[in-house]
Amino acid sequence: MQLPTPRTLRRLILVLGDQLDRDSAVFDEFDPAQDAVWMAEVAEESTHVWSHKARIAVFLAGMRHFAADQRAHGRCVLYRQLDAHGAPDLASALREDVAALEPRELVWVRPGDWRVWQSLLGVAQVAGVAVLERPDRHFLCSIDDYAGWAAGKKELRLEFFYRWMRQRLDLLMDGKQPAGGQWNFDADNRDSFDARGPGLLPAPQRFQPDPITREVLALVESRFASHPGALADFDWPLTPAQAETALVDFIDQRLLLFGRYQDAMWTQQPWLYHSRLSVALNLKLITPKRVIDAAIDAWQAGRAPLAAVEGFVRQILGWREYVRGLYWLRMPGYLDDNALGAEQPLPAFYWSGDTDMACLKDAIGQTLRYGYAHHIQRLMVTGLFALMLGVRPREVHEWYLAIYVDAVEWVELPNVLGMSQFADGGVMASKPYCASGKYIQRMGNYCSGCRYKPELAVGPKACPFTTLYWDFLQRHQARFAKHPRAALQWRSLERLSAEQRAAIAEQAQQLREVFAADSAAAASLSVEAARG
Image 1 (tube, helix red, strand yellow):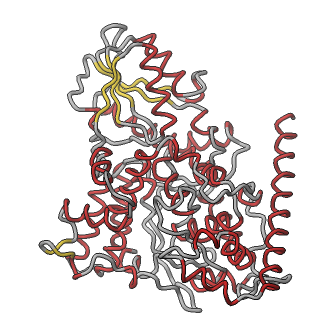
Image 2 (image 1 turned 180 degrees about the vertical axis):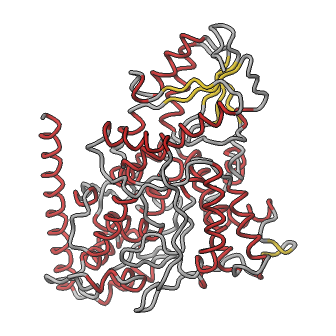
């Protein structure tokens, strides 16, 4: 399709890297004679956080496949490839094209990042061009509906939002009652593997890179050579057809045991029974409604137990929709939350995996290889350690946003700052998710191959998680000792003598000093490398 000439362009339809939705409202009333699709690859979206190579490749390859699909459907696409223009960021690219094409209107659904949204609004305002922001039909709860649900509530809790969503959409309901007589099957979904491990696991469907993706992988290796991560195992779904194949594979091969083992961990087993659908969902290659319906259909057909299906639906209908609403309710201030006054730098090993703590070595090594870790590895290994060490929440947020292939700020930031780091002071989670090394030992086999002992808090073999756990309880005792949901956990401090408390505090401080020194040294090396 030929691009409309200046002043003949009615609408410029913006499609960003996490908006690859064929059925998006931006295409309503699309007229090929006077409208055009606008997409742009820009360096800033890969460098504003030091993004994993696989994360960069997911977005660029997904965008290029989507642009080809739109052209095949007869739509004019103005597509800026990264290596073919000089605009450093989305605002600059859009500003140039608005000036050249003079569209009467810009049409978009809201970006998944406050920073991007504000920058695009700024371009439109300065250029004097109208903006039509259409509702994002991908999601099952609109931003306005979430705000209406939250209005007047003293506290916001996922459980009540989730029940409200199930009722309003009539999902997993038996009349007015929840299917199976209960809303929550978490008690059935917390198993770990025995000493034999998970056994022979069904290998998830892989998607070998096609020519478009191979071109992107080569570009990323060349343009972003210094970025973390690897691309040798890159196999993510990048089209709607691949997303559907990945969904069917999960339903057929792994949903049956997903619920039971969703919190389990095992060395060198990144996928276990997890869906691998987060990339497809967060790029909007597949809808949450389609994913939820497929899981419920499997239960109704007797192919998966209710506990597994409810646990999966809770993640999609509950957590995913909940954190999006919370993000837009609390931004932009959410980004600066630091309720626990955490000021440690992020340990350097988060970028390299170079640590002798077996759980962190495995979880981070896996992350660097694939750009992926499942939710318990993120919450109760990498996130837990950062919480108890006292790392600055914004640094933790920026690491998660950079390092995971499925990370878009609307979903990543509340999960990290709210749930993982308790930086919002209890807006998202009622109490901190803190635990000793014994939790990690219970949920997997990491500890069996580690030099540290999870039952020890002091001494050369003490598990740093256990040391930091007891230190965390001490440092925040005044805040949580009388907390209705945390008091019992904090009461365990009474078992420790004054001498034990002092020894734990001293060893925790030594850990902080060692990791801070390593971070400072790594930062210094990075500066020197940048200077050439």
